[in-house]
Amino acid sequence: MPNDYWNIITIKGNTAQIRAIVETAFVDVPQWAVMIQTIGVEAFQFRLWSRNNPAIEFMNNLWDTYPTIWIKNAWSEEGGYSGMIVGKKNNIQDLMWEEGSVEEWHNRLEPLADPPIPVFALPTGEPTSPNSSFAPIP
Image (cartoon, rainbow, N blue to C red; front, side, top):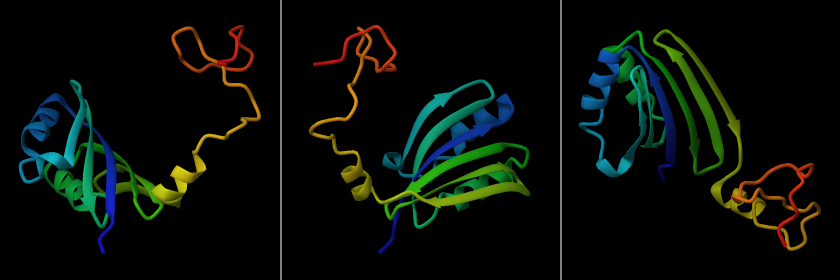
């Protein structure tokens, strides 16, 4: 059974490269599989679903077309592995670690019935440190 991979990809390049990638790179990608998060003058970031690997073929195709772009892919897969691929064509760093499955993290992050430390919040509801002058949330 194939594993689903979730990729958060950041690409840096010149303005012409970024524009061309945004306009053409997702033509063969199902609309539901990609979500562009931010587009800037010389970079953009998006989420991409891939099957069985962390979007390696997608990145290699981009590097073949635009060899000077820099790509960072922070990925995770449903079986519990995560990693990061960073670099330019022919100068790529690849790191992988075991992080735990989605189910394992769901169980680990289940709220404690009686937390050992109080939870503090700013008036806006933003969390802050216990050294804050704000009172704990009841």
